[in-house]
Length: 514
Image 1 (cartoon, rainbow, N blue to C red):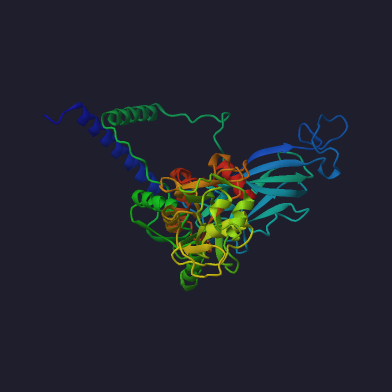
Image 2 (image 1 turned 30 degrees about the vertical axis):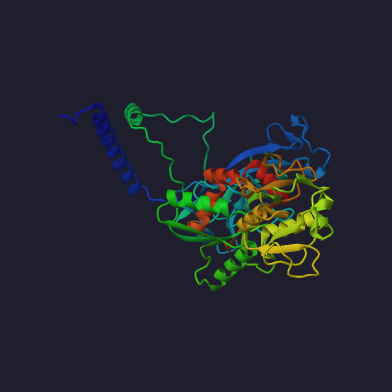
């Protein structure tokens, strides 16, 4: 009986209880089929105008609440309603699961209130949900008594809210949401609040719960294994991520983590520049006969015009920086000095550093680079001078004012600036750390500091966009990886590489400002 140890006994008991629980769960799963469900509930219903305390119309002898909008006749009896709409079912909901036949998916009715004054979509579970509300969608027309909502795909647990300004009725009037869902339904749900009555467990249920918890805790104390759970919503297949070379280090690390967490998934990173990535996505989409191809293009800033089929989502705010060779004792340049250097008016560092006789060498990115496009738009205010050198050291054009070469990637720019005395270039912020032979340069005394984004006015920054061909299916690898990029550990990786995730409160504000 050597096997009869405390560890093995606890493991056997835990396993037996687990079998019983699993058997019960399987029985429940077979007995209760999975359904798609859209749940809704009113989280706020309050008067903001002159309204009787009991919700009845004002009149002689009524107790009246004094509202914020008493001076406006149209809003004297106004109310504010905050409505939460969510997927509280077991399955994801796509646009195709809304079966009303029109271009709207759900209808919100406000019984007893004459008309809707205004509506705002707010507090989405994920910023990408807002992209399903077209730019032309402004809610109902003036005087409408209902709201027609578009067909918004919702993963399990995803939600958004409507803040609605109403006029012409008392608070507490019924609010209903209707719509037809394939293999599912729309229903009124409830949240657990401190005022709700807690569920009552039977004595047997409490006993089983306590015993199972004690066994699990004891077994965990004996065998401690720290393991991060896999992310929710893993998908299988192969995904290609292309575009920005500046954001490529983030994507490569996330690809490794996703492949480790999600068995059966392969994420291939092919970074050749923002514009090249957009073109590759457009070509893949045009050739695809099965909807959205498994390709994501990342771009430093918005895509160029002429690609109406591409759908965008904001990923992060990226900081960029100028870098110079360590032999140039320059720590700060004004915008005017930078522009004079890139116009060819300053061709020797002696103009800025008296006594230093060293020609200026401009090491730039190719024309398809998003990093270069951001530099030209936000720092130079114009295009860079013409390409004049193939080796970045000697001018091929004797009439060129300054030696300037173009390279294919951020890594090539950094290596070349570190190798050539007098060289100056630009890079994404984190890529410049840990490299010898070069250093960052402040602009007008301001430095690229992630924590100071939005306050310092540092000019060389841009929003990183992710593009797909149309809207990928909610259960696709494309959708899953973008969710992984924008949540949880994905946000930590983005921060580690010197970017601010758009999905954070501060990032949401800065990304929204553009």
